[in-house]
Length: 450
Image (tube, rainbow, N blue to C red; front, side):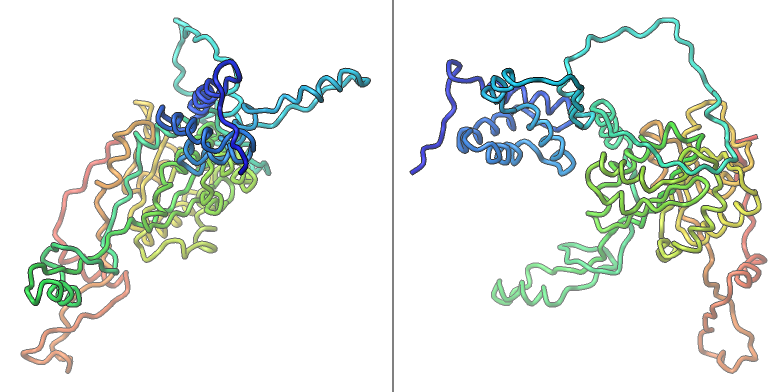
């Protein structure tokens, strides 16, 4: 029987202290870790031993990592923390001739590099710091440039910021009843009796019906379509916005929902395959390779026309919730943008405009593109605080009359006395014309903008 090498005391090694330091480095890298997991890692190291480095790494990873996106960070940090010094090779290399040169640095993630770096002393913020509201980056450009986005990987501070924003600013996608049913103990007035379950429960209790299971409709989140502006005016927000949307909508697919993400500038780029990747750094790298019009002009009308021609099936049954993240500084034709926004409204449940410029108190959508977006959107929300995301579920659904019920003429042979009139499906224009005269007059809501 092979003897497992056990951990020694301080006179034979310092593995216990290295494990504690390794756990602290993982915390600095953004990995969720507590003292109990570090204790489990020490116990796993005692059981596995230090004879095999891959076995030790696998045992510690199984107890210290709880999320898929943290596995790559753990492996890189483990390789850098528990290195074999190879003293014999180093002593042999001193006797060999050396050549002057510069070795290439080891490529590591920014989170790993920050965790291995020495802690910096906190620096005091300057006292006389003036706040700048607008600068040249808030202007729209009319240039088409072929440029791939150079999205750097997230650092440890940025990763913790994205995780905190995903917790504090959730995207509560509304849930609606689906066509599929599930068995529930108690149901409402619309619940049906689940008779196979009733007979099964009665057979277990000797024929007594003590429990009456019912069938209720399952609830599922609405399909989500996200359109992110990556033009020059949104260049400073694009990287963290993509990381935030990736973290905030991560659980949507596990709940039975659908998530489609597109980036637009002078054209449209499908980022849905990149958003299926669990690791945020790998997602940013793949998104940067896919986007070829980064930091260019903004042509939202042409991008929506491309969405209508090539990806119209992404809007499922007029139930899709559309989130459009942009500052509204469009350089295209307003007529084309108005027409495409009307098409998007007709084929979606809600159209919400997430505008990062709402953090300025004196902002008003005075630009041509921003004015068209303000007219077409069901709501304009900010993305810089937690209270701004709550209106996503509070925004009322549009009541678009797809069918109308109108009494048929008395001369019709189908409407005989004593029989109810039939419901005829009309076109959208005919339905609006037929119901406009009978619709009660309502006071229009005044616009909050001048």
